[in-house]
Length: 86
Length: 392
Image 1 (cartoon, one colour):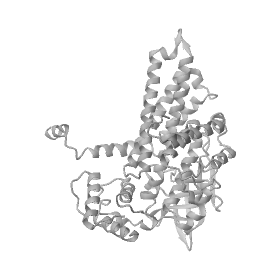
Image 2 (cartoon, chains in turn blue, yellow):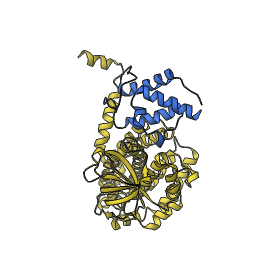
Image 3 (cartoon, rainbow over the protein chains, first blue to last red):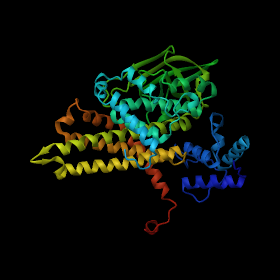
Image 4 (cartoon, helix red, strand yellow):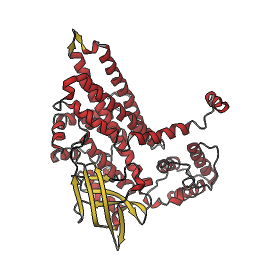
């Protein structure tokens, strides 16, 4: 399994979210759910994307909204999952 | 079903599904609609064939089937009886939800029984006052020691009339939750709903919960995630089932009408020689081919775990259900009085395909989601047309 560093994850996740909402760049701290930038299906699409891009499994124990609310928090979550499965 | 994009094994399995449908469903389906029930032995035959645990892993007694073949299963069953495909739909939604979000104890307790069809599971989200606007659900759970107490009503729940396990969505302390409730729970009442337009044999029911006590350990996932993660995850499977069942009805309509217009003559020549009829058959065939490709692309994306699988499944469901509704109407037109008689399947197809435009998110909800998505995907594209618009 390949591990990613913080900047790589931020770039990959930022690119995906930016593509979804149609912006070239988005601050790592913005809560994309609270800002209304994404629709009701985005959460499940994001989960699928993270599982595919980083070869991690998101399960019941990972259901914490703060993990997914911003690029920075998603990055920290991916780092944690990668470390757990290393 | 054309063989492009399919493996030899998938083609063979589809043939087996069609043989099963011919043996157990095709010639009985209209009688089931009239009786508004599917006989228990037919459900048991599906269980014995492994269809109820088709997508579950072998470790739980399932078949470990891939998503493409699951789609083909729904195509074959749905083409014969969409009511019966409704069982595959809701049972798989329940089982997949448990597989993804259930804890170890829940999986051990129920997945082997679900895989073998010894228990039937259904998905209960809709309420009298909340359909696609799921945030409006009012079913309420409260804590009482190690129990949850539920009060509320669910309506239009497919196969609830014969199910053993129910995945009930509600609110707990204001947060959305999904909880498994067993049929024999005291205070839980199941009222069959009759006289539907389509899916008449799908054992629809209204569910009433009057201070039912269920173990808190039946909570699936964490509070707050039921509507954002658990329900959409399950509905993906539901839309795959409906898409392929619509495709099956489209295929069946084309088979029946194709044979008929070659054999039946009017004004001295076969119907297919008449331009107006040929146009109807052409559109039916072209839409069938398009629906088939969209359905296969959707399940291939799901099988590859691609993020855009959700959108591709929405597209497939939207297109296939609309095409099936349009062409079942044309099929009735082509067949004339035969199409209007309930002794023949086309009248049933006509009623069922209308229903398919409504279930698992109405086509208007699909338009809201897909319209925004298609528009948004153009935002970053720099084309001549966009420059022209900007300058206008």
